Length: 141
Image 1: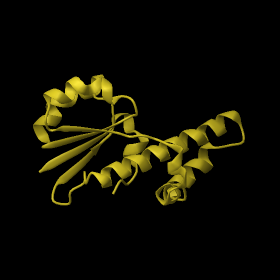
Image 2: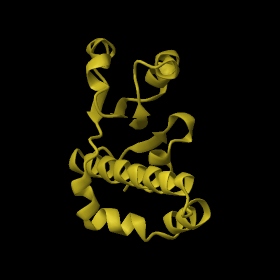
Image 3: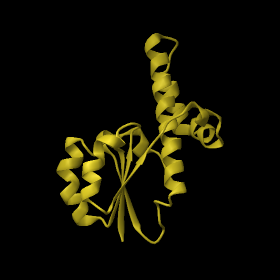
């Protein structure tokens, strides 16, 4: 079986709507990880498609105190990005919070994937990300 995990998914978005017929053609199960509060907008898409499951990625500050977040934070890729883009300026501080926000998104997405067993070792799993989202660039399993 072929499964696909799409994130961050806004299934109401033009890209998703235009690509859905092709995605459905090649994948048995479609899992959409969406930004918070976008799930209500997408009900009509999912009611018509029974092989699509949507999971809302809720980001909360409590994730800052998890082992998974700190493991992400000390990762070489994360450290290199912080060193490269974060300075003691308004722009650098904003960039730091932007990086941390996506770290929280990553941790929350990883928890959803693990809790719901979205990655099945017997299936081929494709990770698909619009605009090369940071959430799609991390190792999720």
